[in-house]
Image (tube, rainbow, N blue to C red):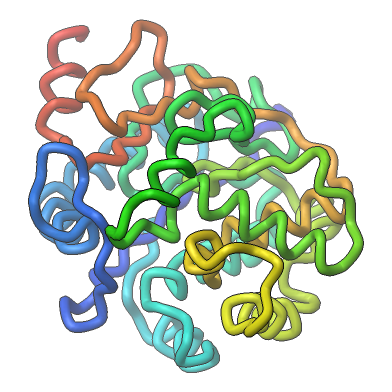
Length: 297
């Protein structure tokens, strides 16, 4: 029997009501809030996105689930503090589902809804165990090598996104520094694609001190005499990736660093390199991805 038989691929689609959307700077080539643009594009393209993920799961012999806004999600959302946006609740919920499925399956692959498979290669065979991308969205390199964004923030009066890798880098650093952990080797993790199993998730122990960690993050957001300048402290928040990074680094959890071909960010430009296996369509230009797939088939 194949060791890859008991595996699952899953995603999550929660159509957040418009009144619960938090403002985020627009995607490249758009003028409306990133959150509203995302909502609109998912409403149009979600059937195709789900079908592509489902096809990939079938191709590699895995079960597939796409969880939605249901009673289980509603009950989970009720447990969250009012300071946490609906978007962040959704992203904490996907981590909970990761843990739930790891109780039933040997290997679990989570894909954000905007991740489109473009390969017939088995993720689990290539990436056994805990696998995730770290680095910046633009270059997938260490974030200290690209400080231009931070300089722009310092000089600008515009509202900047606390979802950016730069924001999560400084938020993670603050969490580590204030608890006397080393800040010399910070990684920013992206949870848009996660491969894992029960053993690795138990090491991470994401939810054991969840309430305490959320309160800790809240204290950094509201700290009156922060050692960080105002333009950095304003980036602090309550997102799943900052907490993931904090736990990974503070606990020194071993992991496989996902390669760019297996987690390609289509962010500022509508372009997909040859050899891409999983494309993460950040800018939500799904029509381009559809046309690209058709052109190479």
